[in-house]
Length: 245
Image (cartoon, rainbow, N blue to C red; front, side):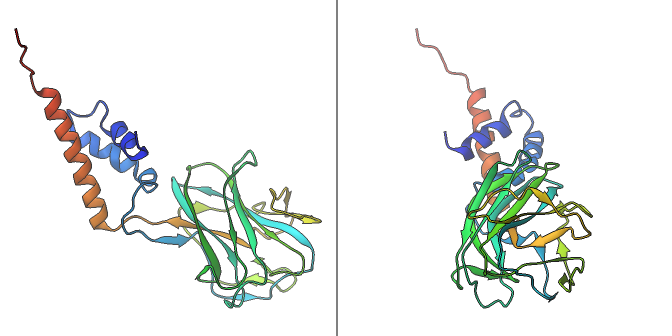
């Protein structure tokens, strides 16, 4: 059975006598449903900004990241890396999101140059839609080779600062202890094990895109289709099949 049909069966299981209850269950599964919707949808970066002071790069290879907690289930469908001048990246950058056990759950490579789409100040590549659960802690990380593209942070330290950071309400960052790194002889992407021990709470580097809610017309078609299938199944269950002698 296809995943979308398994979801449909789960929605209507035990609820065929109550379409309203089935609809409520369907809406509760909305974030997971985004994994299977092919209709129009949009994605938004988890963190955005348009103005920075200074950019940091010291020639060392390192992994740079930050932790976050979704406040509701979300679907990640893109990973990105900071393009300071919006004019292309000097090198490619692997990016990954890790769970609390330091296991990578989604990853991708943002290529050098301008091949990846530009979203605000980030080059973004698409990834397989991945569900992140509310209340769980995750870490997003990017590998930065030596003598490569720089990164930024906030608040101001050594003249580097993001001046207009905006974080989507669906995720939260810690006021301290969110920024992480590993340095200085890394040769590939790996979990950034060291927590920054100063006031900086985010090192940008890496970013991710959150799948948006499908267009209203798409949701309407989904809901009507699911309810239609559910009601048809209910009617078939209620039919009496005559026995032949």
